[in-house]
Image: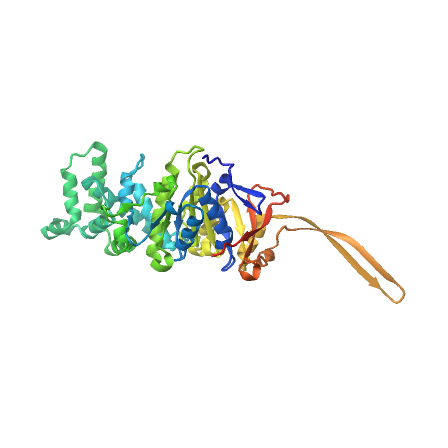
Length: 473
């Protein structure tokens, strides 16, 4: 079975094709609460992906997401391809070890690991992406991480979140402390430095180790106490998530014979991985864990070789504002060439702006991401910003309106007619407040307006009014 980009996998209104290529260009679905975005266009596209044989990754903000995907998979004959990653520990993902051991030239590269932590940090603390955040603290955290990871890798050839934490907490806090036997006897940092010195390292590894040793024995203990504690707090508060149950067992400990590794590459073989660690249940920890997995899944997709026989994969994120990162913009820019189909669902644009930290720079990031998702689907919405943006996206044209008038007096009566032209919205913002929301009152019909960049529909317009029939549950 081939997966050519022009292969149709769904049709709007039964006669407007939606192809694999369209899916790989990304989909953004907007709709207010109860608008039918999940049960309307969302479910229709999800079922089409499963029916076409796609693999995928599903992130969970709410607890009911898993039940929905179990139903989709059962109805499309894909139940055996569904893999649920949850707090049970049946599947684990020691992400740092995965990044070290995976195939590819960048495997184990320190800055890749640092970038991973930075992505998680930005997802948890959105203020660092805003215009008011001081970039010094992010750079300082990255420097601390870089030297910790290098020390672990050069001395022991492995790294984990608990090991990183233990090294940092045992590091010297003053130049004077380094010469004390009390510190040397207890410090894991010192022990790893000794192990590194004793190794026969190659030329470039020796350069890296010397730089790392200089950081731990000179620069780090020489920092002002307040500065050092702020940097340390920035990092350890983020890592703390992966040091407590159930996340330590899922992400920070090596697997055993009873637990299998949930490799992101499984989706390349048609597996649908559901990260059932909902934000509504696990809070920031659930979000951070899913952001880690999403980021490494995106990179695994970008590394794969693609032909017309390559199974497309999808990234499915409802309540997407919880999981967006700056890397999403880069990923979507090349998603078509890697057969990756991103589908993001959210209520409105302000959700994204609020989560990305505010400020003009954050707005540009959100607009860039939304702009790279080429298919837009709008359901019923009462948010003015979203509706106005939708109207602007669809565009304006000249509209001719008939005018008429009457005038009369005691001895006359005149009727006049004419035409008036105006350059106005093809779909005015208020139209999005009138779309049907499904349910019994609407015979389970959900309305939406669809737009695809560069496409004229069969109605010779840039937008399409379409209906989705909600499935019986």
